[in-house]
Every structure is written in C-alpha cells, then in structure tokens.
Image (cartoon, rainbow, N blue to C red):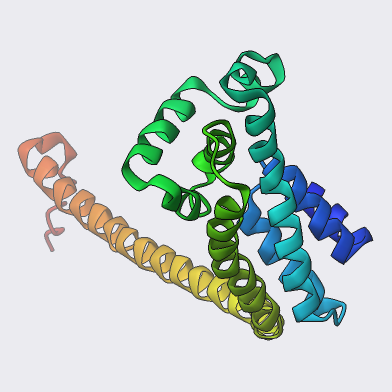
Length: 230
C-alpha cells in the first residue's frame, strides 16, 4: 500500500494526491493519514507549495467523500446488496454506523472523519437517510480542515529534521554495535578466567592423592638400602 501511495504521489504530486484521496473515499483501504504524511514528506523533498498541497488534499477528500453520499442518495439501502459494496462494507459496519447516527445525528459526519472504519459507511448512510448535501458538506469539510492540513504541515516541516537525524543514524548504530561487542568480549573473558584456576586445583588434588595411595599400598613405597658396613 505504501508503494502505491508513493508511486501515485511521486509521478504527479498534486494530481496524485487528489486521485488517491478520491480512491480512499470510495472505500478502498488506503489510509488517508498515510497519504497526508507521504504528501508532506515528498512535497518537502521536491520543494512543493505546502498551501497547494493542503488545497489539493481538501479537494480530494470532499470529492471522494461525496461519491458514497450520492450513491446512498441515489440507490438507498438497497445498494447494500450489491456485490461490490458488500465486499467493502461489512454488515457490522452498517450497524455501528446506524447507532452512531442515532447518538450524534448530523454531527456523526464530523466524528466519522476521524474513524477510518466508519468513514465511508457513514457518508453512504447520510445520503440514504436524505441528509442535505450542504449539511453533509459542512460537517465533512470541518473535519477535513483539521485532519488534512495539520498532517501535511507536520510532515512537511519535520522532513528537514528527519534528514538531520538520519545523518546521525549510522553513528548511533555503529556505536551501539561496538558497545554490544565490547560487552560480549568482557563476558567471555570473565567466563574464561573462571575456568583457568580449576586446572591447577585438579593437578594439586592428584598430587595429594599419590602419597596417600603410596602409604596405603606398601608395595608402592620404594625400598631403602641399608648403609654398607665397614
């Protein structure tokens, strides 16, 4: 999914951003937040106009969100039986959306903008329930004005800081590897030094057992010759 977003935005940043967000609005599982962040990072890299990115983002959001709204307005709940729609929207999503509408009313449009799983079903239900398009447009735009520009803005201006941190990343990685290697070496030397004193101890134990065995077995004691008489 990330490759698709990068290829869309890399070939034509402004148009690719609008098209990607329209596809998102149709229910294709492409995260809008990832699209905003990618647009900000790519835009900063190529010197794009941040205000142009925000405007294109808002255009793509409103166009994409209007598609399920007008489908619901045109076909109503009977469209739920369509094979294409059934693959994208599960019955559980519809039930959650209905309860969401019962609690929030038209403000559910604003809340759904921040809930990826309920976003598209909520906009469809708004159209099928006969909500005014301009009421829908107002609440959807209000949510989009929060999510889209903020995400693009943060990614755009954090891109320079990210490049700076990446320049130090190799130093940090090599330092960490050196510390780990030094720790392993110290542990190996300590373990080796603990084993070395055992070898003389075994030799001294063997030396102590030899005289004892000689005392117990007289045959092992060497004979002492008497001095010759003059």
